[in-house]
Length: 132
Image 1: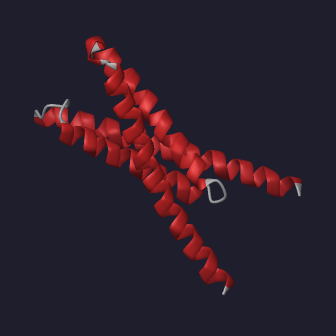
Image 2: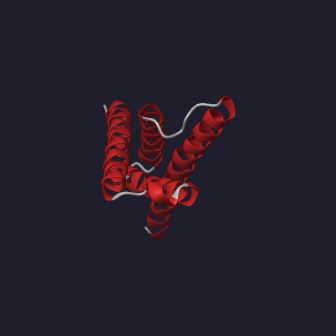
């Protein structure tokens, strides 16, 4: 009983950790790539690409943390939004506006939730195919 509980905690935290690493790492790689090839980083297309990175991180977190996958995915979105906000304010302190922060958190939260929902569907299909 205690070992099952401990395994569940480790599984959930590892899913969250890997989701954050994937989400933030993919965003950082995207930003570095765009700077190297000379693309502007403050465009709508880059924001959508960063949201897709967060969605991928939410998907990974939801896939690995089976029981609380959606909660882990939303947490990945919030953590990635905080990291992105800190990085944006560090690079350009005048770029932070209330509306920008709201759009950042809502967009990242929605994408992480979509990624977690897709992972939930996959985990449910896996579980039902094993049971039946």
